[in-house]
Figure 1 (cartoon, helix red, strand yellow):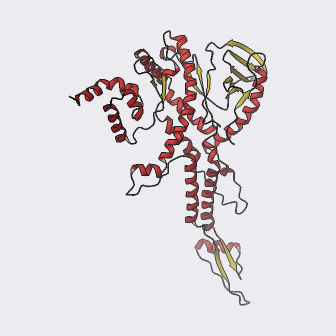
Figure 2 (figure 1 turned 90 degrees about the vertical axis):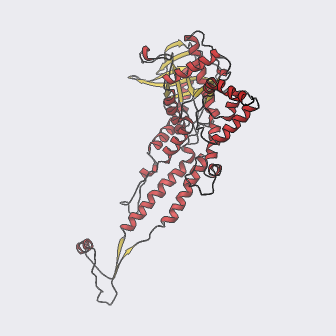
Amino acid sequence: MFGRKVIFTEESRIDASNVVEELNKALAIHNLNVGAIKYLDRYYRGDQPILYREKKVRPEINNKIVENHALEIVDSKVADLFGEPIQYVLSDTENKEKAAAIDKLNRYMKSEDKAALDIERARWASIAGTSYYYIGDENRMPKIFDEAPYYITCEDPIKTFIVYFADDKTPAFSCQIRHNKEGNLYNIYTSEYFFLIQNDEIISIAENGNDMIPVIEYPNNERRLSDIEITIGITDAINTMQSDRLNAIAQFVQAFILFKNCKIDKETFEELAFAGALSIKDTAEGRTADAKLMTSELSQTGTQTSKDDLYNSLLTIQGMPSRQEASGSDTGQAVALRNGYYAEEKRAELRIPQFQKSERMMLRVVLNKLRIKNAGFELGISDIDIRPNRSKLENMLVKAEVLQILHNIGVDDAIALKTVNLFSDVQDVISKSTDRMNEEFYSSYQ
């Protein structure tokens, strides 16, 4: 497991003449990815190799402990970027019509529960290495309750994949695997057509009226690496170590008794052992009789040191903060650097552009549907800034001071607010605060 394999086609165009052949080629690769995705999903749920360990020596003492750090890793990564809803902000703050369109787009996304879908999709990406959205026209929701003229679903990566053109890496076709009584059904979208395929035959063909593939891939990174698999050896080792520690304790408590130069039958031993004492005597040959526990206790302190080292390595590789306590002389910045919060922030900055790239592709499909169904909705993809709502609490005093300095030297309010990154919805702050900010600015010079 070293990331999911990206599927390419050497064809320059996908149509009815080659779609079945290209689908079969793609399925062979996709099925390899499916095996890894299923394993990683079970691993995330707690179904990990330690549960299947066999112990040949004293097999009755075989603790199988799962410390599910895979769940910890995935939930930490998802919460870091998608704990708050994604916000769409207008690039041009002066255009009132586009500002109204942005507000409508945000309301549509809210009505479609985009925030919950982002969490579900991001969790799949972190577990499996990739994830998918499907943008449809209509679902079974009654129209009276359905505000948005589209709907979004998070697709299962086990049943969904995209094939790319080998030359320019753009999507060639998408595949969604469905089932009926006769077996697998394959929903295939190209930018021109929709094909329904079963048993190597095209059942139906229709035009794709959106001119875009409505299935969007959101890879976890360029190599489609799962967050779980990059430290899966460490998490397996931690499970083994913790299980062996409990085995050692059990074996110490249930230690064997060595009888030297004496004989004792089973019934007598069980009777005396139940009473908590044993009575033995020397043999006639003058040999001293003895009975003692055969114990060798594991050093729990040394084991804990090794376990802490493994866990710290896991946090370092994952870019997650540690749980170390701050000393009395530490500043907030020192804690952020030492405990890994700064590294976590930098890792998130690497992930954001990858997410924004896929999100823009999704928005192209959505905006195209809105243009078709809502005359006058002329919002372009370049008009939208995609803002993950990450925590804005760090260094708030410094950010506020910088904002005041920029404001005082005459920097445009919109530019200043975006620069300091103090608010998630800059457009909303500008629209509600411009008059007051200008009043405060001019009053300070009167």
